[in-house]
Image 1 (cartoon, rainbow, N blue to C red):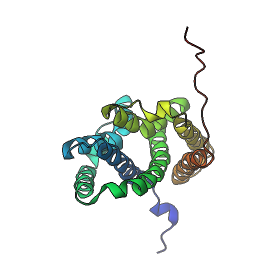
Image 2 (tube, rainbow, N blue to C red):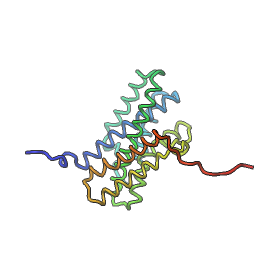
Image 3 (tube, one colour):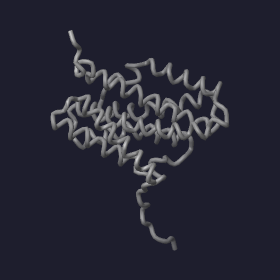
Length: 219
């Protein structure tokens, strides 16, 4: 019997794949930030965990969703520990520049994937459209906010003037539009993730900026 693509790409399988890829991408981003701050293995593990799981955990708290996704799929805790130990053993200062560029693109991928997954989970919970989109933004952005706060930095999502959260917001609305158009749910997920990630790529390539708040001169 022939297996159809829609039978393989079920919603649950697509969501698991999306959260897995996004978790690795954001964990590596947290690893790099912790390494730049010269944290020890415990500190880097904590920063990786906050970056990878912070946004999804806040989403689950707000949606009263249990168990948390990293509790339900506890294998990712072992993956994070393995990444951390491996990086401390093999990463050297000369690897930072090329690795930072790679992480920037992994972070772009994670943004799209977590936007799609977070928005879909909120829609499945019966949330209004705007709430579902904001849950996607929280899922994709809040881990990075926690990472920067723990590392004693103003969150880059608030200060670098790059439309990071705006890309996520747009991707969430693509998810909502595809959902209401009756598309298969895995198509909705891929469309939303691709939109958010592509917009992020364009902002990096063309160096798009959000204007700063006009405060005038201080007397």
